[in-house]
Length: 107
Image 1 (cartoon, rainbow, N blue to C red):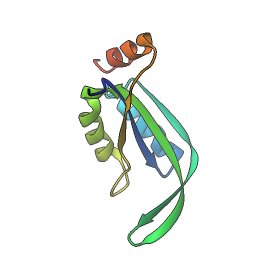
Image 2 (cartoon, rainbow, N blue to C red):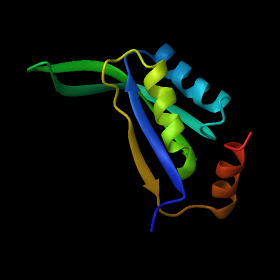
Image 3 (tube, rainbow, N blue to C red):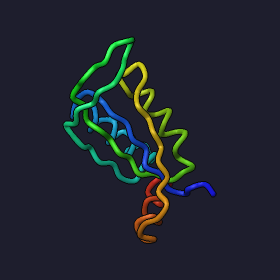
Image 4 (cartoon, one colour):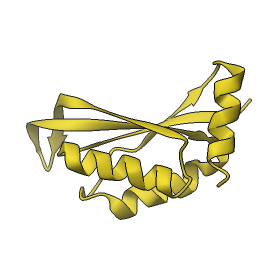
């Protein structure tokens, strides 16, 4: 059974960029709520070498039917060549919150 509610996560290289991604998604009604978390330390392989960078994580709560346009929005707005974009299903939660989450993506 597919989840009806999803958290879409991305990372970026500055708090300002993370805030812009979060605000853009909410303004476009692609998410109901977003949190900016950071700074965090990310360790990853890029172009053959291991990198360690400071990043900020953006977590956007949305309805499942808004994930595809949200992913496209993030790709278009993101500065990275290959941005992290991961969708994680929300399997349970407050019924009132989850109803609000869907309502806010219908603007």
